Length: 136
Image 1 (cartoon, rainbow, N blue to C red):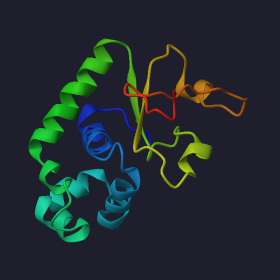
Image 2: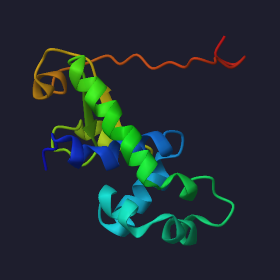
Image 3: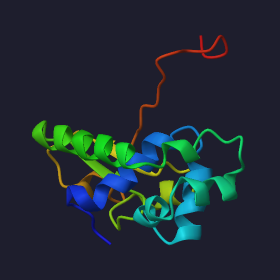
């Protein structure tokens, strides 16, 4: 399914932010509830039942997270950037097959998404703001 409207993408963007370091947990909820929007419709108490009372994630399943994501998507659009969720048919297949694939990708390019993630070889640059001693 192709996603494009802010209302459709906001739950995906919100879950990408919430579960950024734990995409497997987020993807599990998406599968269990039937979609990103359905995770938010189920609410934080249902999410807490699945993830446990000590999990930090259920409290973030809120309207405020959706509002943040909608604003983030508006900013992206104003700058010519895009957000691509894992449910989108244009999401790279090889990345989708990884067990800890991100829920979403941020894209800064004038190119068509299909051209970016075509079948040709590519390079990705992955980094962090806080490098560990191992990475130095």
